[in-house]
Length: 214
Image 1 (spheres, rainbow, N blue to C red):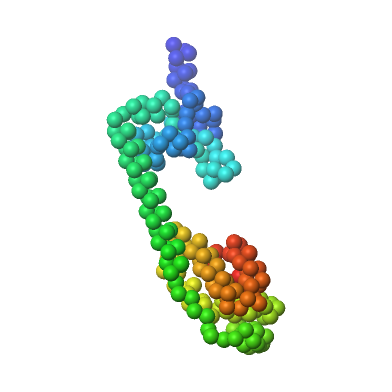
Image 2: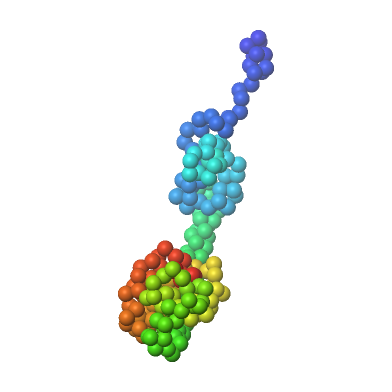
């Protein structure tokens, strides 16, 4: 009886967050690999059985752990199979929708009309050397680079037309595509600037395509 009273006075402490997790548990990442979604975890498993202390790269939060026996029991349920099938269908639909929107943005960027001002190469170079050139044309650049930037600035309105798609899938690629088109147009109109156009194009991967490389 004395032993029983002592045990009652010192009950077994509950599992602590920093303690070793129980055997046979799965975290959220492992559950996702098995076809679970966060909503399914909440619906079929509820509160986690344990937590694993946060590790670097885990976002600073402990990982929720679920006993594999509970996971397997849930996976045998008809309702779970239906929920997983619905999740797969929704995921596929979301991917198709995202791809459709991306292709739509790229088509728009391809169809934008680009018109360069009708001016001779000499005029372009003279403006590039002009100390009063537009502020968005770098004053510390050489004449060839300044000329390309000056011509890109004249096409800025076409870039602004993509602003309506900001945040949409494919917008970054669309801006890069449009910049490629503008540089190709400049190169074809002014062959002497082709090398400078290629140099600008080679740097576009470092930029999101919104602002022309400086």
